Length: 324
Image (cartoon, rainbow, N blue to C red):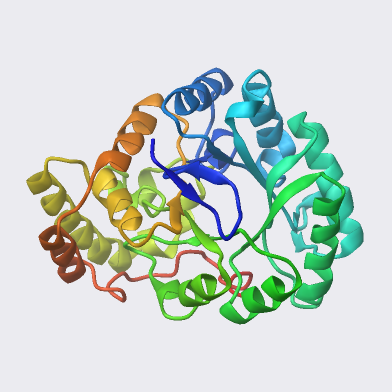
């Protein structure tokens, strides 16, 4: 698989990465044996960029990823995150230097590695100056525990302030045909400071694949059941957009998911989508999108079918913790 570079002087990663979150939580019951097979197959396909976080499965996802890469560590660019604390049934955002240092050590233990290639601040607590948090993260780089720094779901202003303290290799934010809000300010700011955009939920949590069941058919432990985009009139409106995407994909001889990923790859060499899956079938389908080059006519057709503000419904039930 072709490679892309994260930021200025950052690691070289596969054009498509693998989001591992759903292997442990949020999308129904997982299967550890199959999940590890998915990770191994991803590496076989040249998909070397693996994404996890300490919050996923309350640490279980990091442990799973660590077991999967134990004998193939040199093939992997390993990314994890800190910042969301779910202890004792509560959910807080923690960015203090003390918390960052402890979180990093805990992630290293769970992953079973001596360094993390890319360490993200998962969410920002605006009560803690970003300069203070990034300063503590930079110390981890100096100590050899972390290779490169990243942020997730922050505003353009926050990104600029952070980059003034230490190079930020990657900004991870939701980006897809259905989520375009960052194109106005955040993506230009990332390019200005030399930060790559790592796009999570690049298929809009399965919506753009065109095969996702209705919200009432999803299991109770699938958090998409409560997504505003999948509720009532929003769901009907968005389904019509998906139908247009499928029509364009079928004309191109590819799937809607592949079309959606190829569209993201066409937005610039500094954009790296990380579609998540826990199924080998979907992994193979997603990986094939790296070989798709869209024509100008196909890109124009998508622009007409899904304008930036076409989708209805927020991407989270609560948007309080993003773009700070």
